[in-house]
Length: 116
Image 1 (cartoon, rainbow, N blue to C red):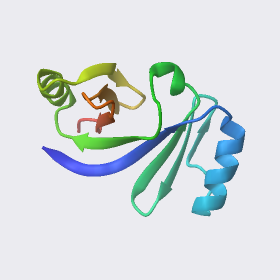
Image 2: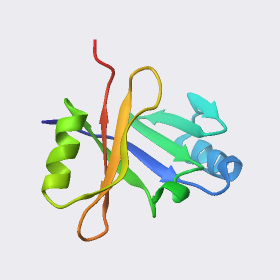
Image 3: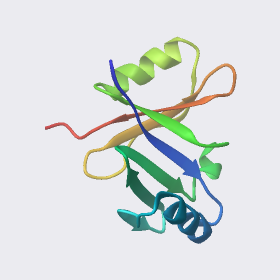
């Protein structure tokens, strides 16, 4: 079960330039501003900039579906023919992410919020 698409991550080569562009677009400053990730919140949406995304196989923006059980969802996606590009990883505070590539080359991200 998903809670919908709430996050999109853009792979970027120049984090400073991308941060300036998205600050101008969204009209807000980032809530997270680290050398490895810059994150914005806008209208209930998380927009992230990942300077390491290209190295991990991101070929463009990756939408992330929020799920209740990331490991079960990842296993179901792989069983349905997806290829794991990033296995489940804790990105801080118990937030888990992973992403896969489908047979058409589309990237699908999944994320699970920290367990209460």
